[in-house]
Length: 345
Image 1 (cartoon, rainbow, N blue to C red):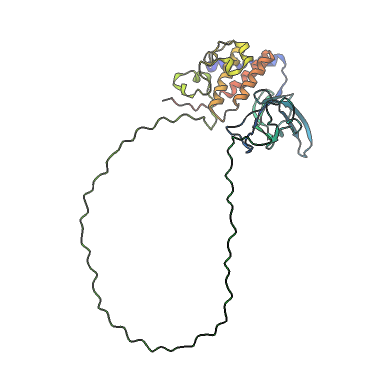
Image 2 (image 1 turned 180 degrees about the horizontal axis):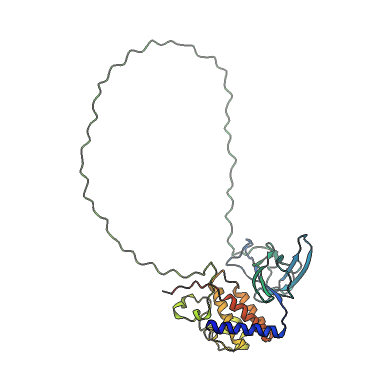
């Protein structure tokens, strides 16, 4: 889509929202993971937890709570809260509820709240619609799993041995003995130092040359800095090496779940989704697929993969053209950043 078409599409969306008299709201997203090894941080052994209650609490400068809400995590370990109007969420925190972590129906026995509360971060603001996100919250089991790495035992240091020094004995001083003066030393003749023989150095020979085999190409790692690439760049063959987790032939129903499969069919591939245009639901799928690829490729992308899938399914469940268009606009905004792609070798 060229810039003129993009500007015309955004202007049309703004006009539709103004005619319908849309009121703003704020959305809060995040996820909860099980810290199986009880090390206080996310690792390869951790997994998302469902059925955990998460509370968002807002307090003023005096510490008085003026707004609070709870939500339960879904089967992907994520949660989404909606606040109607334009509330001030700049001083709000998300945390696992103490009384909600032990609720029945959680996906595992990992239900003990752990870690500090996470402050909400503003990701997107557009005409009164705001999106906030919180860093990952952690829960812990009663005991760490048996396959977790164990810290090495602390060495046992034996106490230092203090030497026992006997007290000095009071012995009488020895008698003084006067020695006769020593005779004068004879003069030793000074001899010149011997001259070392001059040895010619051996002829310099170059060491044998060994050619090392070329190193295999290092696998691409996700960009640490933010990188957001449009759908036109993702379909180019010279950037095919940046596809991660999902491939061009992956089905949309596999990438986004059963809700998207019922809407778009079970035969549509991710590559076909990137060509969608001309209709709100096709535009949503195109930009959601682009955002999902960017989230797998960049650690600094505004949405993680769970948030992209959750927002897409919520828009499809709402069965509302307004929700579909607003979600597509948020993904277009996130996908319009700086792209860090270089041509694949």
